[in-house]
Image 1 (cartoon, rainbow over the protein chains, first blue to last red):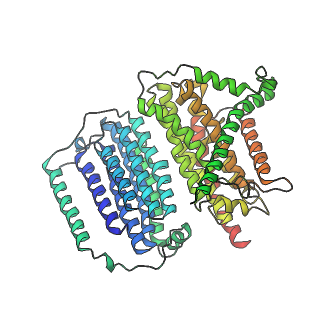
Image 2: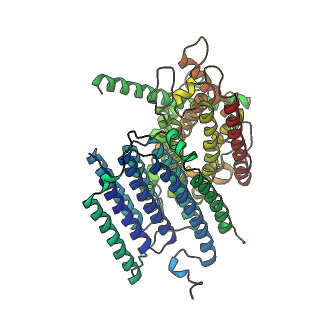
Length: 100
Length: 162
Length: 318
């Protein structure tokens, strides 16, 4: 029987993989994609919870997370285009003109 | 059912690793697309057809196309891996490891039976819509404002002269 | 599921796919005949009576041509791109009701399935453009990405109007709800928006910027040859057929109609829509790209939103 535990296990692993990407890559596009991985692993937890507790609320939360993910990607990619134009690179380690 | 779920989870893991260890940005984006499709499959397993299709429409039809578009526009080609291996990122990984261990410990203790269980699982679009437009009206409006802000911000960022 | 059910399903699927491929092959002939008569020519008439064997001759020719894979392409993506186009073109027929009892499946979020399919359909063209590694294909791919994203919004909003009016997302229920009056009357604005967005989704003139032959050689399929080119070509017509069938189902009452059996009505309506598509193709010139994007965002999307508001008001007061 497929329970909430299975969903939670898989989504923790996927969240870990996504976080690995965010922490270890320097390319802005890769960081955005890893953030999407993390958001999706949260979605997986929520659908497991919804199925386990027969509840509609987690499903609504998934829809809201979809909105957040879409906005995040749109703004992040706009930022990437602008940074490419100004700095000619998408390496996040080189964006430190605001660093004290 | 459990076997199918875990096989699908294995594919999710493979595609996720393909995203973060990829060298060619476009291939990584396509790997991300396949990852999203496996997650949509998980939604179908849970019985929520509506969310599964919404997932495919939003991620496959919108987000990945945008990412691929930007990758072509910026002309990002195959590159040598750019791992950022510093003390900072290792600290992050160790903290995350503790987080994962905590979740797994919680799994082992399994207090999940405390979650109340409703008698009937409503996965239909009508059921979700009812909840969204009555109980969750405020979050819904906030999400719409967030979308508006996102549109304006993306426009300003990507414009040539600010 | 018993063995008998499986057999029946297999037979049904074979009928749908076989019939559709036959229709698609003969659509190429129909298009050439239509353009010929519009331009006061005769069109193909050498192979068989009235040129009826022309599609078969074309097929054999394409099949025996050399399959060139240029050295500079990204091989994996280059090969899967036409396959995605063709597969996703056939997919919508899974849920389209051809008559009262003949349909492959009835799922209660059918319209979302259609949108998901059209979302994935983008990748065939996009990947072809990127993987070919040539300037023309690249520009074609970029144009496809921006064009399809823009018009998919209008398309989905037009769908929302239909769903709101009929109170269901299942295509079978939507068809049945139209037995008194077809959706084209209460949803007229939605129909116009849907039709224009469908033209853009199909990359047909006046929106065929991705493969504009005057500026981009052949756009995304410049580097393709032989059977892979044929798959793109057929995929284009399969998409056209699928879109006509969707318009028939959503707006023109599907298989409903007096006297004749449902299937015949469905075929007649689909062919009328197909003919209108061809008629438009050979009548209008091509848009400029900035015009295309501004039509999508500044005209179609506000119109579709207006349509949703009007539908909601009508729904409450009628």
